[in-house]
Amino acid sequence: MPSAPPPRVGGDAPRFYRRGRLSFRATLAIRLALVALLVGIALGGHWFDRDGLRDNADGTISFLDVVYFTAITVTTVGYGDIVPVSDAARMFDTFVVTPIRIFVFLIFLGSAYSFVLRQGWERWRMGLIRARLKGHVVVCGYGATGEAAVGELLARGTSPDCIVVVDADPHRLRAVEALGVATVEGDATHNAVLETAGIAEARAAIVTPGRDDTAVLIMLTIRRLAPEVRVSCAIRERENEIIARDAGADVIVNPILFGGQLLAGSTTGPHLADYVGELVRRGGSADLHEREVRAEEVGLSPAEVRTGQILRLYRNGECLLLDHPAARRLERGDIVVEVSHRPSHQAG
Image (cartoon, helix red, strand yellow):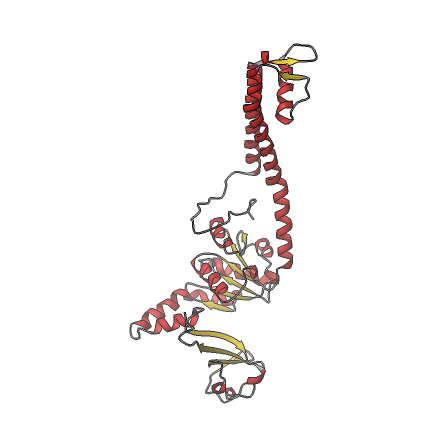
């Protein structure tokens, strides 16, 4: 996870962001060097105008007296043993040393916040969120397909609190964090990364890394950590679908093959692609969904269901065609794939 919280996106104005490349030690060294520079400026000014200072103890100003006076005036307002008496010395303390004192205070305060308070607060807050994380969806890979999947989950009513995106690219994660979605930066093929995402407590996982070999490795890792979680995977090459199934994928989607079929079908039926798009896109005129048969529907035929048109029926994990004798009456525990149509004034 990044050491600093991501920038917040506000309004419509675009915001350029690049993750810092400096380590903790480098950042701390720069701040200490800046403090040393500011103290050096104050020390040089006091030494140059040392005749404007008066030592109430012995009446002489040595270099050690200047060092002492500079340290005291930069960190406090002084003890009164050494005081500026000339106008130039007083103006130097007023317009140079006082701003230096403020800057040094802000640098130390900012360092304490950045390296101690903020990190401690973020660790506590992330630990609390992870402890409450259960029944969520883990999206492994936030490329074009992963981005579309997250957008569709949100459009279908899934709360951002119930989505965790895993990706090794911090720039992609900054984009999804603006939606309120939790993120884990790292390689999803590693156990520790998926454990951080709470894969064992997830209800489902979507695997979209953009490469079939990486997708298979991620699924093998998921199956080792969470054998019962439902895994949906995007596979680009058709010959890799069997490997993905053997690796533990419950659902395999081939976006290239699916797109090719729609394009080919649109050459003979120009409205086919539009209708399929309405089916799979939330908010269109047609809504395709999967659900369990309700208690009041037990005993009815698929044609008698009024909530929509049943296209497929699954019983005990087996697909029954609607003309099958066993599919004439719905039973408790049946799963149906149903399409429902919205009135024209509600579509869109």
